[in-house]
Image (cartoon, rainbow, N blue to C red):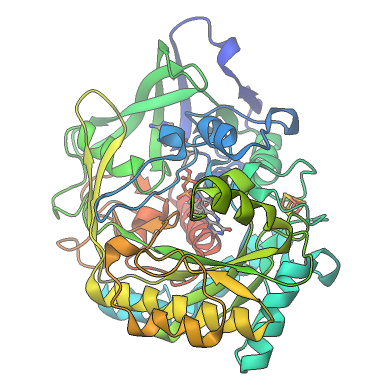
Length: 512
Ligand SMILES: Cc1cc2nc3c(=O)[nH]c(=O)nc-3n(C[C@H](O)[C@H](O)[C@H](O)COP(=O)(O)OP(=O)(O)OC[C@H]3O[C@@H](n4cnc5c(N)ncnc54)[C@H](O)[C@@H]3O)c2cc1C
Ligand code: SF4
């Protein structure tokens, strides 16, 4: 039931006329998959919830089909944020719904062996697959998560299945949080048919219906504390896209939940006076699923713009450390990794209707980095280094992708590896991926799945939060985003992050 004197609403930039303050039970920073789930569960339980989001809301009319323009509007640093050390682009959203607005809706459960490893290595008791399954189930029911139906797969997803089958590798339609997907292949720039169940069309409206107040265009700059307790957050209103700061605000809360994403939450803690850091682990242990991709050109026309953006996967190699997927993105984004200039580049682009792109994400647990606050901005400085053994996993994944392409009937592939020919025309030529020594600087990686910067650990000396996301050394402060993962989940992270957030919210209801 909605608490008396409290009505749900979403506020946008134009509605802030002066400095303001709010009172609530729970202030949640960040409206991505984790913040949205926590907001919904707590509002449903009758708690007074304020959800704060720095980015603006988007409607289908706001979506830009051009990849670069879309990235400039929906992503931090225009979508070109990179790590230093090993240079890897990493996209992080800034919009109502966070990453769910621009992601491909991929929702697998983390494998049992991965969660068992989390528990063993990090002194956790309940984060097993059996412990999480009821939370996965609740999120799956709410978001309609299910396998991608055949009628929206399109040729490039079906060819991946064909290649895997020919080689005896397991594969299956991608589980996704969509309702009525039309296979338009444009998840990356926002789903214009609103089939994708991003947070702004699913958990957030329901949270609002149950009384949650959603403030957009508000940048939280500080967690406010009194003694050993978090008592609220403070910050400033920011204009969409430009970031001009104006009115100040303060939200007083019994409990604060940080769900700002694994790169923003450590920065907020560091900027608030190095909070919750007696373990020294805030901003450390940063991990990614670095990804690599190969494009294959087929003799027949595929019209790859049709079909669920990422509609098929293979979990065959999870224990070797990588997962295989199909992929599509706006041509301008794909062109970035298409070799050649002038005529050779035009020839490749002319072949786009015959092209499929498949990728691999690696569980790069040996490759770690740090998130550090930069003076004068909330943008983080990220350093990260690809470990040679994790490079080995990526190279092996490229070899397997090449094999699947030729088994599916591709006439040539673009391996995207410096030092190799731009095109390989046969399985024999693809052997070069095995013979040629490949360095980290030879491959084009991307890492949009990021974790572990405020990791959970049963031992307060080794982690920032406990299994329920409670900060070990500051009362009233929880962290929900993927920063709390102890290690890589090995599969796409959003579903596991939401299951953990669901569990955290249920525990919080009893404590408030
Ligand atoms: C292009 C792309 C495709 C992806 N595809 C998939 C996929 O298909 N499946 C999958 O499982 N994962 C995918 N991911 C990853 C997935 O989207 C993220 O893991 C997930 O969104 C993380 O959720 P979160 O709640 O931890 O953080 P986020 O989704 O990053 O949300 C954090 C929110 O907090 C806000 N915020 C940050 N700082 C502040 C502040 N100071 N004040 C107020 N608000 C703040 C941000 O603007 C943001 O909206 C993809 C990511 C990208 C970028
Ligand atoms: S493939 Fe198209 S219709 Fe389906 S969820 Fe993605 S954007 Fe929406």
